[in-house]
Length: 465
Image (tube, rainbow, N blue to C red; front, side):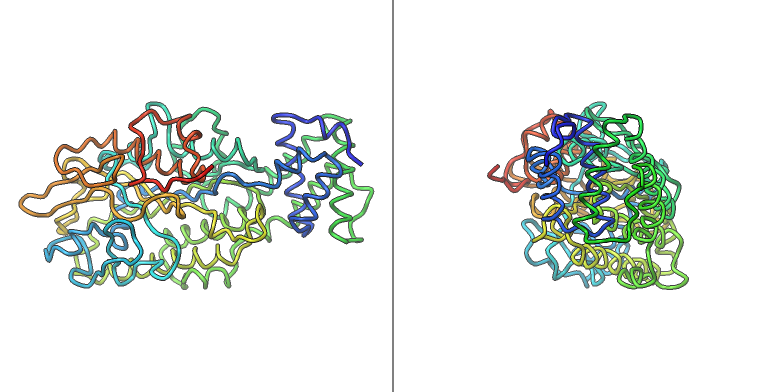
């Protein structure tokens, strides 16, 4: 029987109830169909309809401050650098890279590059300006003045598909602001993600006790979810606060914590560098949290190692680093592919995750000696795995001929535009492309944040919405 107190919930109250119900259902092992039936029976069809559909994607964002983003060029090299034959170029596989199949625009695979046989593809943008030696870069991830890409991604997710902890970030991070963006929950390392979810989830459930009538309604919904799980072991006399403490405090940590078996999928071996271990464990916990419907956006540091000496001993160090990157990005796709999408029983999280990667400086494109921080025309990059919502390949490029030059890209056709490079404007447009992927092709939602030139079908994949 529908409870009018739940049926009449609106705005934040409705979102809070759905976050609570979704979390309890996940922890009790209630499948999606039963969950929606219970919501429909206890809170009405409107709440069930809201809970049933995921109109946005999930995001995993990597922030490579202090030169960290430069490492990604080992697995996503500039096309003309990989093909250029310059032995002094900061790329470990000159003459060994191959053209990527199935891309919309030119893209080169290093021998170690991930996803060669998978559905995920990079959209690599020349975007933003060089911000050498900052741990919290912004220009390649800014949608408009005063609006950051990271915050806008979370705003898109929070409005359409609320979750228990909408946005979490491992410090240091400049999350920024955007209209409608949630407060970001910050932790100091990947292990802190588990503790954050424990405490935040418990607090969210306990808030229901502040309203006695709603607490009773929550409790009735819990009993229905418990019955749907066919479990007799849960003590019916639990109050809502005790439900939170027992279900979440005891169970959630173990469901989120990376295991040795998980780490093996990502190729994480004993003795791996700490920054690699942190990246892998953040990826694992993010996917597990997505699977439980606990968050929509996880932000993690990417190396932050300022690798000036990476090529000091030749190609060996860069090759080893590229191998590790290839393994853990492949592992992320494999792990997500084995994780059901909680919003759609016929899909996996591999169908719903997008990835962004930006940083302070990609470092020199044509000089490996001491791998200088400076970039041609003060340029920068933003990489996005848009999960089919963006054209793939390089947008803009670096041409090593002569003293080297950077090409931007046309916002309609995606074609390279040699000549003047406007990093700030291109950063806005590339960030808008990431928002388009997050919004699953809803350009109207992107326009809530972006005021730049329209993105054409040479950049985005139009959707019939």
